[in-house]
Amino acid sequence: MVVNLARTSASTELLKQVFQKIDAQSCPKTFNFHMHTIHSDGRLQPSALIEQAIAIGLQGLAITDHHCIDGYKAAQIYLEDWQWNHPAAKTPHLWSGTEINANLLDNEVHILAYAFELDNSSIKPYLQKKATTGHAYQASNVIAAIHDAGGLAVLAHPARYKRSHFDLIPAAAEKGIDGVESFYAYNNPNPWRPTALESKQVQKLAGEYGLFNTCGTDTHGLNLLQRL
Image (tube, rainbow, N blue to C red; front, side, top):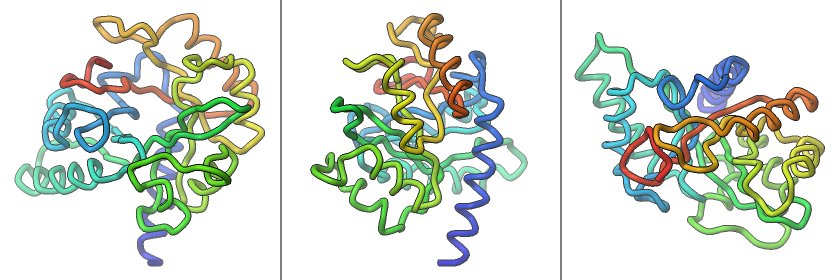
């Protein structure tokens, strides 16, 4: 267990360094921190996702299936096998990830968890392939569980909810969120690109509240360079 925690700590610190450098050009061809597989509501097999990530030349990524890490586990095995068979090739760094439903200001939001210890008891209630209820459903408790597991918590697509991101981001920051998904394509453009106005607004709020900026395609289809 000590070894696992040490690895998680190193992985989290590496991710923090990456998040500090994320900008509007980072996604989708350098980093991508929001993707789904057949293990939640996506269409990609984990192996196909990793194949695309390698072909694109991604430096780092996270699979964020809803309340589930089965896709991440399968992708990690596939990536390790691929690295073994291609020792000289550059391969992306794969962080653990999941997307968790939570209540924030009486509004359902999604919180992305990254670089957490898979077997930590605090995170396990959120990895049962369904949303939690009651006390565990509150954003403050979701964020605390992610932190207990050594991970980072990020508010997903903050300008996509019924409540304004101008309200949600300060509230999330007060509850200990680490970052916000600043660069997100709200209108599903082709080619993928972050929506300019919302990204600028979210990035400004992130700066005001000392939060990391992240990016992701939120892929649900068969192409990592698109959302749907």
